[in-house]
Image (cartoon, rainbow, N blue to C red; front, side, top):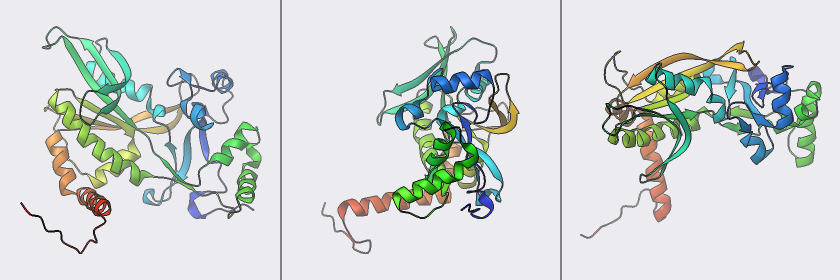
Length: 308
């Protein structure tokens, strides 16, 4: 039985948009090659998600209530922001100067920080002869039941009957026959909000500008919770947020394009002030207090006495 599940299209719309970097129904030769090799065209190697979980989808379609029920494509793999979005950050900072891009850099800080990308160039005017930026990418997490059965249908070249794969899974697991998945934007901006603060502090200390690259929908969600004050054009800044979105157009290889929608710069003090004064700051405090109480197993209404 096909269930529409309201305006979200779950049960009526094939959930997966991209597989191995290309539209799931692409006939491009590059798409066929990526599928046969189980490769990610954005990293130039094997698909990490497929290697770990045997799923190779890059994005899904979903209609979120906070987005007025509009069906949109959401990247659910960080590597989907590799390529042009990351390259935009490099060009934005270095211009026409040649720069080297490296990935997965571990900072020698406490706590240890993993940086998605660092771009650098030789610069005799810099104190140590190096200009560099840090780049963080952020995709959206899936929540709920997931889209695994849809992937099985795609792998079996049976997309027309994809809904039956959810029915079969429900029967195997003895649960209700639904297509139940969503995009966890709330978890993303909570995690991203703190990551930007922590990494922003570190990079401020060592005088390295930070770029945060994401889908524009995540940037909008972040700004709704942490409404930092942007700086004017040409003013000193510490953090640049860049929001990209699927335009529906294809690039020369047949991949869906992610185009820049908005970029905005701010200072670390502006960001931290907005974070601590917003409801997000209150939520972070509540979360921390709850963890402390749970650790000590002390009822919330019981006061501890300390002797100094």
